[in-house]
Image (cartoon, rainbow, N blue to C red; front, side, top):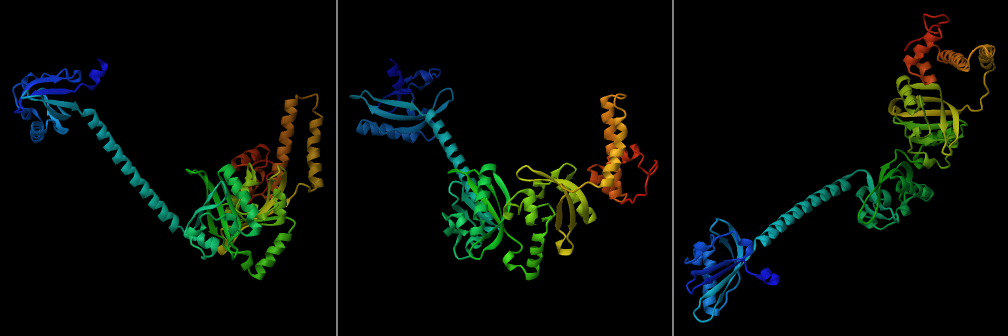
Length: 457
């Protein structure tokens, strides 16, 4: 029974030879419809719009050949419901008439509607992707910066723009010819290991700061930085190359001589831009930060090694920009191996066309012998604390000791700064408000005893 109901037509009509309905049977899915009004009427009268011609054709085909082809019409029911249906007519034996068998196509129509909607959505998405790809291609090729996309798996070039083709091959090859070529092949031999280390850092951390490399047959200097990007076949590296301002090969003799002298200075020297990014460093500075290759320092921010709270790169740059020069800036340099070295910094901002550059001299003062007089004064001041042992609590002894030491160094910093409160606050790593509070507490301000003449900004 289940098999019969599964293949039962939705509408069965018994027609006479003229196409008039004599009997009508509906399936259970249409059991709510009453079709008694169809009896005695021509089938063409109850079909929807444009269905009459198809019905007449099916009736004529059944008369002539015994069976008609399947045709789709919109069948209208007495309740007003109109359903797309597929009919065929079959001639019965003798003059008994013919049988019209119809199948509900509403589910198929809904599926077709969904399919069309899905196809239209896919079409819109396709054109959006094409538009995005076109914009990407225009930006990629029109960029003045050399951009190279490298496979993270084998470091071979996947794609490069025109500027990259010029940087890597000095215009001897087109950018299409670079695909599949190993990136390190066009890097100067002396820089390949540094570039390989940078690429490994990008793969591990997702990005890396700029380094200086020399590319192509002419070994022209370029600053390169990179980042990691997700891709369908596998992750890729996006590398951006920016032409360096001047190549060591092209430097005038006077500049080369000056750099040679800077290289031999026993104190660390580093040249940074207005944001603190290093573009030159001597060997003494490399020793302080415990890095062997100069190319590993170029392009990095000085804050990587100079980040002591209150005496970090931000404080140094702020004072240099405000005063033009900074001296006796005491802080600490932390090397790559974890060693922390106490240093004293002098810095000056460039003039004219070099106003965006800052020269920084870093002196190691970790082994500097303390001034004898200073140690005696502090020792004398602390001597009275020992006499209070047994008379005061440990908490009070510690508090008094801290006050004596703090007062001593506030006074020393004030003398070193020549009475300038702003410079004193910078030396001590304090805000001006905190410094004023301590000066008042220890009687070192203008109104208290021991006050000294100050030079305000």
